[in-house]
Amino acid sequence: MSAPWFTQRMAALDFESSDKDADTARIVTCALILVSGGIATDTRTWLLNPGIPMEPGAIAVHKITDEYAAEHGMPAEQGVGEITKAITEVVAAGIPLVGHNIGGYDLNLLDRECRRHLGDSLEGICRQPLTRVIDTMVLDRHCAPFRKRISETQGPYQMRTTAETYGLPWDEEQAHGAEYDALMSARAAYKMGAIAHTPYRERPDWVLELRTNRFNSLRDVTVEELHERQIEWYREDAERYEKWLRNPVKAKDKHDPQVVIPTAWPLRPIPAQREAGEQS
Image (cartoon, rainbow, N blue to C red; front, side, top):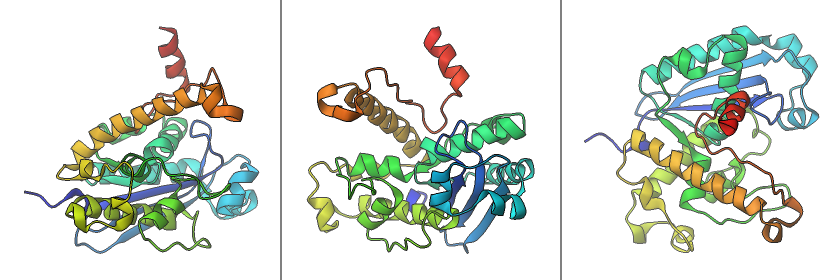
């Protein structure tokens, strides 16, 4: 029997980008870090010139200005090509991709950049579907649901909250850099897997005190099986959130009766495809 999924080699992936919308954003930085599996850590990073002005909010997060990216970043097409080549090698080797919200944002960002600069989808360039993705946000929401916001500025399932929940040290000065966030996502995945494979009564007190505890769903599964489960967990969570937003009593000032939350994971259709599907 192979080693548990959380102890195997992983490829941690994270991007910093020009804005929050994966369909329109451009890559600014990327980190791809191969960790664990009893092999030395291998880190690759990229800085790209996105070629468009970045949103002020994005610059405030990653601290890379338009001027700095233009002066020091490689051309976007070259950078996207190098990143995608590295991802293709990882996928071909059967190494799972891990990241925090990787299926909700990062892989979709890369897919759009592939289409924009390389003329094909991410899976088209990889020449196979992505079937080994580990999204620590999806895992955390499923295994430890119903957490409340830490503060007005810190959400219940953002990377910092997840890291701190699982006992990982957090350095806010290094945070929001692609390399730091990628590595923290891999560490969080390991922590979640370790809890799942620990006898119930020996798990951390905060886990035992959870009103709903689903860590056993991460136990004794292959990476491929975990991937399939995440597809369902993401869809269920998106459907619940959409229903909540459409409820004026529960959502209050966030109420939106027409909102549509995408349910596909880890790659969602491009907007034109979504519109065609809704019309058919």
